[in-house]
Amino acid sequence: MLGERFKRTVGIAGATAFAMLAAGCVTVATPSPTGKLDVANAAIADAVSADASQYDAADLDKARRKLARAHDEAAQGDYGVAQDLAEEAEVDARLAATRARSTKAAQAAAAVQESIRALDDEIARKPQ
Image 1 (cartoon, rainbow, N blue to C red):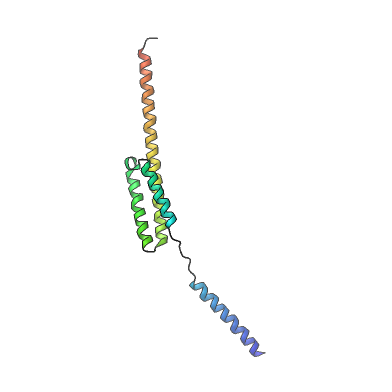
Image 2 (tube, rainbow, N blue to C red):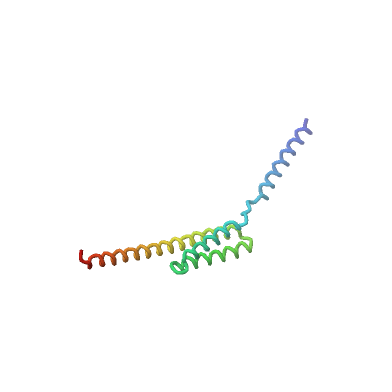
C-alpha cells in the first residue's frame, strides 16, 4: 500500500514538475514582420504616387525613416519593435498621402472657383 501511494505521489510530482518546466520554456515568439513591412512599403509607394513628396514631405520622410529602422530591427531579430515601427511608418505614409490628395483637391476646387468667377465676370461685361 505504501509503495503504491509512493509511486502515485512521485508520478504526480513528476508530471507537475514537467508541466511547470514546459510552461517556463514556452515563449510566445513574435512572428516575422515581413507582412507589416510590405504593407508599410506599399503605403509609402501610395504616398509617393499621391505626390506627398511635394505636398507633405515631412510625414513622408518620417515614414521612410521609421520603415528603415523597422528593417534594421527586423534584421537584428527584434521583431516586436520592427512590427511597431512598420505600423507607425504605414500610418505616417497614409497621413502624407491623405494630406497630399486633400491639398491637390483643394487646389483643384480653387481653380474651378476661379474659372467660375472669370466666367461670371465675362458674362457681366457683355451686354444682354
